[in-house]
Length: 267
Ligand code: IPD
Ligand code: CA
Ligand code: CA
Ligand code: CA
Image (cartoon, rainbow, N blue to C red; front, side, top):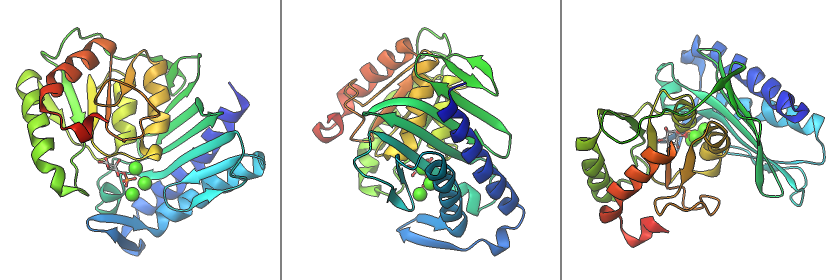
């Protein structure tokens, strides 16, 4: 295993221990509302601090950027770690046991290492570029469904941008009749990991952030899938509008969604 992946796993597991322990004592977790319906807790911040400390101690020359604490370390480093210390904060606060930790390493802008850890199921999804994707050390691959018929897709609702509801609904309405069913489980990182493992046939969401996507993008790709924006491109997924699936299901999803996209969502 790549030594940098090894450290990332150690960091994810230590944050996982904190999160799992905190799930048993939710009454003392302190949460605040960052913006409308968007929450953060002391555990989000403590988990990010733990991860950043582990990474910064091992790699003092690397930059670290996370959802809650922002940038640490030399900004001009060509090694950049991207961290979501707790993906699924709304689930966590309510005691819904579906959360994850997402850590990715970019070297000169290219994704090289990725970890998504589900501390409540002890499921560790990992990938190193060119070395495939694994779940608890075993190789995983995207599903082999040839079309949308029978597919199980996942999505995220645009709960922070309710003005997007009309366009979101028309995309949902275009896909839903064609597939078996749709899930909204509340951790984008796990949605991507489940696509990589073939548990889900595809995933789509509007307006994700780099820390939601980075690790999952590499894990899906190394599992034989594709991750693109709604136009089918992958310009670092700047828009945060993401579709992930096996190549066949992805093409079918994009084709179905296209007539319903606004110009803004195509960017
Ligand atoms: C959120 C989760 C959720 C997705 C949101 C994300 P957070 O991340 O991934 O599934 O729908 O868009 O912001 O805030 O819990 O880390
Ligand atoms: Ca958040
Ligand atoms: Ca997140
Ligand atoms: Ca988070």
